[in-house]
Length: 85
Image 1 (cartoon, rainbow, N blue to C red):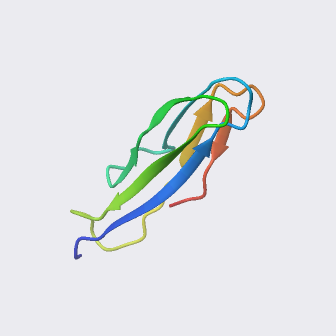
Image 2 (cartoon, rainbow, N blue to C red):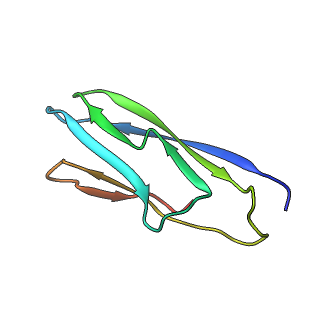
């Protein structure tokens, strides 16, 4: 399989009035997927861009999928699954 690198950018924003601590990870670890940054703290009205990168190096041809899950200390929205990548 020829090497294929793909990147998608996600935006995480704090729409609240208090600092928001967040993190993201795959629901099943996937060495072929990376997220940068994978967590942090956002002040009210701040946003961060997260690069999600797929790297096919060493993978055999086939379909690959995983869910990226965002967790936070927001009491109303603690867990936000993103669509499968």
